[in-house]
Amino acid sequence: MKYWLTFIVNLYLKVYHRVEVVNSNNIPQEGSGVIASNHMSHLDGIIINAVTAYNTRRKINFLAAEDVYNKNFLFRFLCDLGNTIPVQRSTSDRVALLKVIKLLKSDKLVGLFPEGQRSRDGKIGEAKMGVAIMALKTGTPIIPLAISGTFEAFPRKTKVIKPEKVKLKFGNPLNFEIEKKPSKDRIEYVKNEIMNEIKKLYSAVGWDEENQVYTGNTKPVKWVRIHNLPDHAYFNHSQHVVAGGLECQDCHGPVEEMEVLYQYSELTMGWCIDCHRETEVKMEGNNYYTHLHCLLYTSDAADE
Image (tube, rainbow, N blue to C red; front, side, top):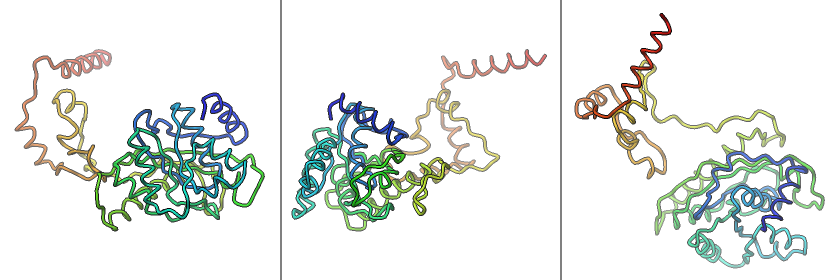
């Protein structure tokens, strides 16, 4: 999508659909990536592509059924705006997967709708295996996205686009290790992980899926707390990182490699004491405590 056309489309989206975008910084600025979104309407691909191009000047390549692409002039025009790659329904998923892999190896962005079809009732449906297989085969970051409002704006069997409000919320990238021959259970697990993230984002934008309305009650995405220290325990990260010279991995393990975060160390009092006994803190040239003492002295002088 040309940038001038992107500007026009985004202007239309802001005025007519009052499009609101949250966490667009999660869209990769470079390298490969897969935007995995729920699918509500034919507008989804166009809006996602326009928003991405406007924020990153990158385009997304979507896969769509060839019969939809060739349905009529309007559909072909809309598909071309969304950089759609037509795929024959009669071909196996392997053909589509090979096309995706080729794009990702060229550091392109790919857009996928894990459900494989538009929603019939405005609710998120069951995902196909394709997105999980592609994630495990390529190891490409999966960026979950929840889009809401497009079902009301342009649902099935309608020819008029309504001026409904549309929201997009991008989640944090999901990373999965490459597996040449993933098991069915593994594929099912990854598929559910991706869809659960999309559902959490969908709820967080304030959309009531059951009643098909915006509640206005937006909320942060609910995270599961992993490192849960007692209330009486005080831990200062800056003191350990700046003064002690520790890396995050020293206590939390290889978090950059964890598909699902877990507690790596005991984090008990005995474990902390052992670490303090064994770790030598470099005091020379370390201005952390000097700065801290200055702050305390300044505070005491002000009290007097």
